[in-house]
Length: 172
Image (cartoon, rainbow, N blue to C red):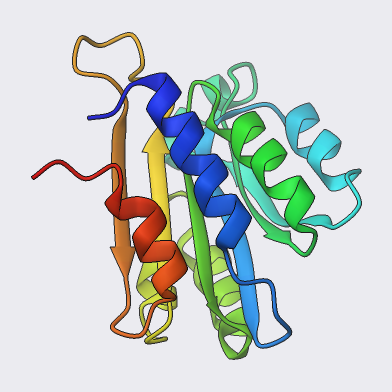
């Protein structure tokens, strides 16, 4: 587990090197615990586009989902300077995942999220690309003694800049 400061530093390192070419996409997936207004703020940022937004949870919790901060969503990032802002907004008290993968997977990613809703695991789609990269953290575990829970997955041909950015924070 990493401290809040380490996660912020790692996130900044990743954001500075994540591929933003025409053939690569960058998504941020929020796993719930946010308000609709948070996603509206993100959608107003130039270069950040909310592609999907929905209440996160099973149907039988629907009455509670209307009063609790329970929105999750998929955001496409086209402007590098917005990436850290989006991660920070969605990661506050929630789980968030940055995903980089081939642009050819755009439609599959959106279909997967629409079909699976709150049970989505977008990294499963991204993993079809040998260059994929996923980095996530649980922003509401910061109060625990161990620090923030983080995870990372990479393809066989992931950018060395990304793997090097993460390697600095991996314990032996």
